Image (cartoon, rainbow, N blue to C red; front, side):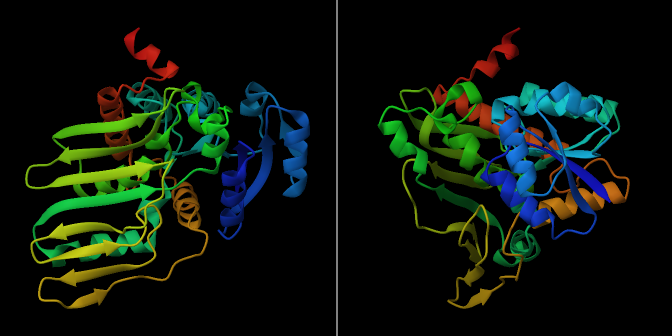
Length: 331
C-alpha cells in the first residue's frame, strides 16, 4: 500500500483522489492546507485523520510515503524539494515548475535522495495517446503537428470585473501557456523530441500573464503549430499530418476519439476505451513505478519534462511574460 499525502485542496485534488481510489495500493492518509478549517473540512470529506497546516512538519511526518502536489505553480519546486529531502516521493501537477532552473533543481534533488519524482501531465499516459504512438507510422513522413486547446475560463469573467484570481496572477506563475498550453506542448515532445526553434506570440493581460497565444516550433523535417487560450473557446480537433494521411485527435489534452484519414479517402478509427476519469492512468503509472522500486518514469521522464519546461520558457521570453520566480535565474 502506498500512503499519499496531498498539498492543495481544490477541484483538481478531488478529481485526483477519485481517480486514485480506483488504483490498487492507493491510500490517502494526510492532507495539507494553509488553514486548519480547510484542511479538516477536506480531510473529513475523504475520511482522513491526519491534517497539517505547516509544510515542515508535514515533510517530517511518517504518516505518508508519497505526496501529490496541486498547489499554485510558483510553489511546486520549493514544496517538492522540501518533501523529497525528507524521503517523500512526489507526484507534482503540471507544469512541473515556473522555469527550467526550478525543474533542474527538482530533478537533482530527486536523484540525490533516491525518490520518485514525476510530472502529473495525464495526456501521455492515456490509452488514446498510446494508440497515436502505435499508429503514427501509418501516415508516413510527418510534416506538421497541429494542436489546439482553447477553453474559456470561468475566472475570466471575474477578472474582467477587476478581480485577479490565481489563474491570471503572475505571482503564482500562471496564465494560459502554463495552465493549458502545456497540454499541447508535452505530447509534442513525447512524440517528436526537442525542436530546433521556438517562436511564440500572445495577448498579454493587464495583470502580466498571457490570456491566449500561439506557437510555431520547427523541427528538421516538420513544424508544429500550437494554439491555446483561457479567454476564448475552440472547437477544432488537433491533427498530425503525414504524407500518407493525417491523425485527427478530438481533444489534445484528453483524447477520446482518434482516427486516421488516409489520402485515398479511407478512414480508420483507432480509438481505445479508457477510464472516464483520465487521471487514473498517471496515478497507476506512479504507483507501479514505486511498487517496482523505479524512481523515474520512462513516459514522463526527466528529459521530457526539462525539454517541455525549456520550450515554455523560450516562448515566454518572446512573449514578454515574466514571473517573479524568474528572478532567481539571473542571480
